[in-house]
Image (cartoon, rainbow, N blue to C red; front, side):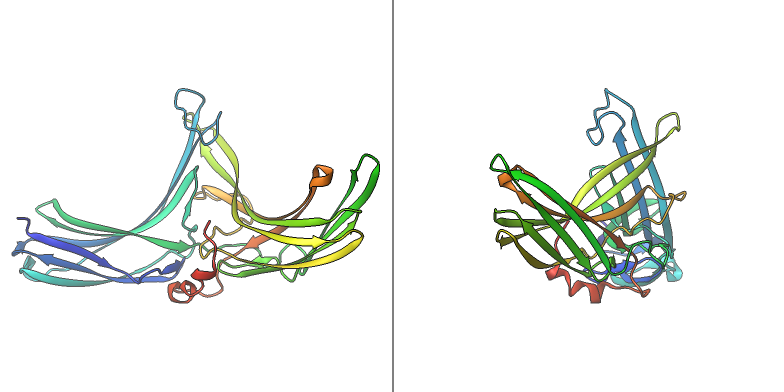
Length: 327
């Protein structure tokens, strides 16, 4: 029978930690018998990596092309707990710990190309042997150095127009206007926008598709340390509005998105040393015109920045989780 019955790591449930905030928890070690010269410690680790095949993107066929990769260590903090008289009796022992996260960290992130992850790990060692360990992954919302003065209009107005032909010789235009009071948001925000469709055709428009995309540029290196980049796009949120916009008429649709609680922040410029990727966001509005075998699209830039206050934001943000779409 092992001397260690169990080791538990106690952290706030469903917490989301903002870079620069503090993390508090407990390690609970339960022993079946006395343990002499124990080492009980807890670590806080943050790492990231990206990898892709230069020829085929995310399909990792190691027999072809050149594998590009990159990695970063964002933090590694360790606290070793003092043990009085260098022994612990049978039963449960509780150790409190506290860590301060670095002020600039990227957000927790997962894609087919790479991953950024954070975890806390408790372990108990005896005579240099690991007797027990427990790991819990945590969610971290990164902070940004995006300039306070955005280069985008605020409020924002985006327009698009398309001339269409249908029924052999009939012609008309469809005009879109998208209006947003602001285009700078923080994770968990509501994104509210109004779409105005001016249908100058003799056909009815029945649906409008709204989608939020993340455009990510990854940076890696070949085995010869040559710098490479890879562009990828992923859909975060999607919503379809069923409309009935009659011929030669104008209609308005008010839409709302609830952003995920953890998002990579929009990049403000060139990647820095430990940055594996840069991210920008785009809201795409598409009006399908099946009777003309075409569609009209409008793209709206969206900026994601860090939360305005520093601290553990798990309690406040978790309340919004029921309204937020997964991505």
